[in-house]
Length: 604
Image (cartoon, rainbow, N blue to C red; front, side, top):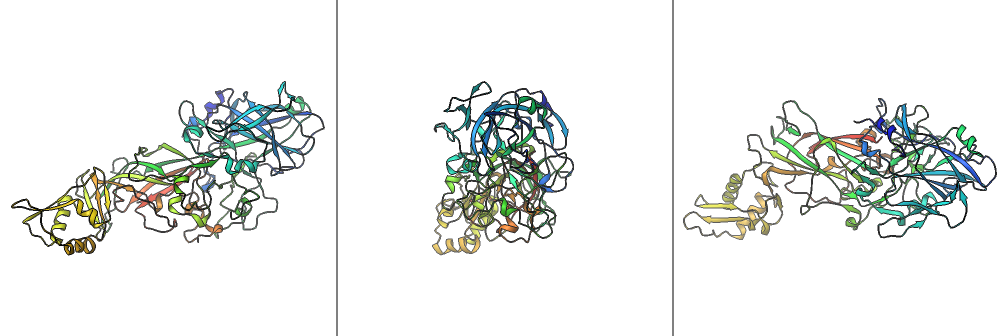
């Protein structure tokens, strides 16, 4: 992957990515405290860009740099919250930061770090000050003059404003962090705005939630373990004091997840091609050429900032306070929190709560982008340099239903051993055999009780594949005519019914040009998967939460490792059933890559 040392040359830019800060006490001592009384004070902050880490074996703490455009920063807003603690603090002032310069930090997991930023601020009469950084505001945030006439740093006091839709109005935000998670501040997940790859790039980034200690190593974490999103900052009396003091470090993350799909390279096979094992019972030595992939069932809704703490009014949702006690036998650490720490770098948090965290019931179309066979699709190319971005899509363990989880729709061409590439073929429910058109016509003729004096002709209504699930639909594509006078044969209803039910199993699949689609259990994007959750885990929150889902600032790389048979001839409908039900024809390995990167292997 590309390194991002070039960022040191970008002036007037700030860059930050998914990570968390290892700050100790969020409200005591110098962490957010007030040095002296007065109308104004000074703060000193630095913005870090976490990237690749050195060799770490635990899946959670595997990082990768990514692409140049994922780091570019076009604008930065620093918002300050005043209050006794993070949960009660309210947003009181904001600043546009235009002078951040980045240099190579030469430390593990942080490639670039901004120069220290000193700002004169309005000092609260009491309590603490907490910082929120917004990079690449994407049209959702701006600063504006306060309704007061106070002047800070030579200009009128600025406040934060928010707008959650293109048609909405700008409103001054003076709420708490919790208010950023309200349903009024849920945005439509527009990748063109929050994950733009055009030009230099524009990825919305905000504070990452951080743990103050390493991941718990038992179901009983320490009493001091906590997670924070806002960063406490020290207020200094003079600018000279601020300049000579240590800066308050702020780490932020991208608002989207990232996915790539590749095919395991096999000796003797062309790129993106897998040959089915010779020992396969039904399709030995068949070949599958993978042509492309597309994310399916992506979330239409997202929070501007990651949510790890439930609102005081919410019930039936667990947050980090519960996650810290979740433990699977055999784990070396709690899966929800990072263990990597060096040079005062942060401990990450590896889960989050999205706007539709519990089941959406019958409102699937309002919540998810899902493709059907009638969809006009442009597929991504295979390979680890072809990406698609999406909003995070998480759910509690009890609501991990297939039609509510983000997955991968994979397009391929299946060629049976000895067959011709790009050839049509047929299958039906009561047989695993593959039939050419001529062979299938022979099956139909014989089971209708007709002789060679008749000819069966199959006429499909479209150029694409299809699945036929009713006798009436099947009869529309079949014509049987006499070889002597070309008249249609007279076939009894009983003969048709026997053929359809007893022979064909009431299901016929037509693969046009050998094209097949895979969208099965193993092609759902797994977050922790079986790396941190045992195969035997039950579907309860403590043991299974986080198994499947996509989380912001995580990079999921799926590698197709093997295939056991053809998929579907058309884009399959997704059933409303738990994720742990059903057979898979794909074997996929997933890597979640700072970007935290996860790799998932897929066997088809």
